[in-house]
Image (tube, rainbow, N blue to C red):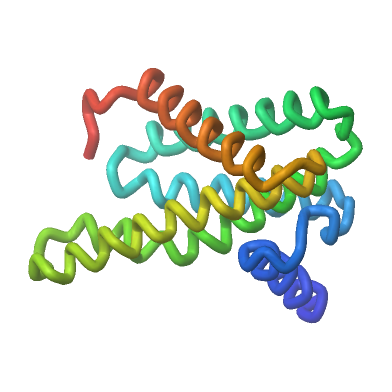
Length: 177
């Protein structure tokens, strides 16, 4: 069991480092549900920094629903629906890995007790993580639909922009924490 978990974690790290693609993951509904659940938990925990629990949960549900829908439509358009389980598993699994790195930046950046130079480093690291997230998403989409990296990047940027727009429209900053 521990060996399987270690192998899967390494696979997700390898995807984050562009050494593997979603096609290298097992096509497993159980793994998909596990990764989706962990991704939801990390989304809620990251959103809790700025919003109450109920809002964080709703934001996470909308985010996951949008992710599932967009990837379904992209794969259907390119006649690769058979890759849906592995693609979503890869996106959620790498989302958890990246979330582990982003978590201290989000909570550290929210503290106003740090010196200005340290806050600037936190912001720079957060920006690097956002760019890395876009690159990983582009890499996964590129592999899933067998297209160029440029198309993958365009889809990744468009997806993140649309997702952010949807969340901000549905959940305006009326009563943040």
